[in-house]
Length: 227
Image (cartoon, rainbow, N blue to C red):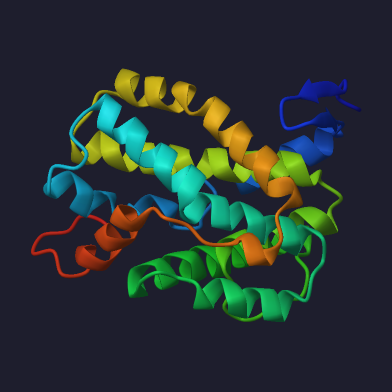
């Protein structure tokens, strides 16, 4: 069964088979065993120090991470993995740009768990320890799943996990978390569109407070999350 082509704000038409859609939904589902629920990406420190305390501050923080931080960088890495770049070299680069020890562990632990869990779908040959966006991009490419759809879905899953962490940490109500997720739809699509033509030279960012949060998290006295 072929899904009807739908115009997408990222700048084109995405056509997917029902099987491709099912695979993408499975791989980026919160229930896919990557251990994502254990990571807050530095949010735990941001909540403790008062940077994130309500709906508005959470939305602003996540917008910056998506547009100017690790969200955008991950989208670029995923796209280049999808285009079957030198995956070993690309993975080494993804590891090298990790802003802190915990960010390094976060991407490698999730990426490695992702490939192990995806064994039923015959993943491509990858390094023993692989960054999460590289793993997702490479697997999607092997199964012919659209690059734009994979990028947007990856960013959506990334943000959803962080919102879930914030709902527990602040705490916020589930309805508040869903309003933040809905408000970030256009940001996700904008990042997906902007990274389509990005090269590896375009990787970088200025979400310094988020990087500092990740660095401080490992020395927090009390922690619920691994990052």
